[in-house]
Length: 313
Ligand code: SF4
Image (tube, rainbow, N blue to C red; front, side):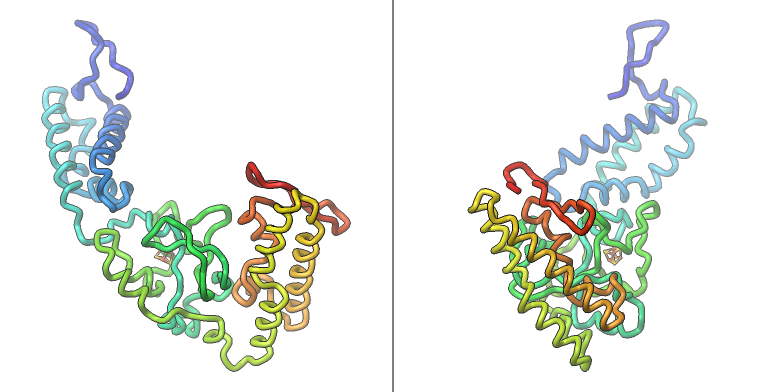
């Protein structure tokens, strides 16, 4: 709780009748956190429940009038608020409270049905990435990562974050809400069934997006042949097994993949942001998956630096 207040006529107390608005808000935050811990068995994100509670009439009324409620009535108002909060917490409404939590936990994977959004220009291609076969991925239904047996196309996430690029964080708003992908439309934190059903729908693949452009089909096949995710994984495994001796092989592979991307971008006039969709993320960007990051040394030289305890360069 907040620092006890000095009461001139007795011991220090922390009583609603003495709170200004700031202290009201501090105590409210503490109460909500305690409530969330008690309800930890709920699968629904705490931020979403808090949002629902703060949208209820009692909260809006008590919070906006707190300054003008006289001291004698503040305890009553506070108690009413606690009762309303506990009720809202146990009666999660089947509506989106726009807490933004599901958009912060990861971006959507696209399904064939979403191809329409790409064709109509509603889902810009430079905001999409391909996760290739063999890459680790996360499912919205299970926190444990799994290995992809087939590629997936996803909306990109913000740098060093799992937040979807379309989330406007200050407003908790989706910038493409009316044209959001199937997975987002199906996702409901109070009911996992629609999202599970949508996951049964066929996934969107690069061959659907670039259908009829033979040359790009050939580029993707060549890239997979020479720069598969498995080849990167094997090179890092060898690096680990050799206790850092085989670093040259990893660096060569990174350089080759970089060169491949540059060549494709130049020869086919494909802007760099589209390459994450056409070829997947670059090997350089994927080094952290193996506990390393790439440091540019100048003059084109590169060094691998351990990014996590236990990795060896
Ligand atoms: S596309 Fe919109 S609704 Fe879907 S995760 Fe991104 S911000 Fe959220």
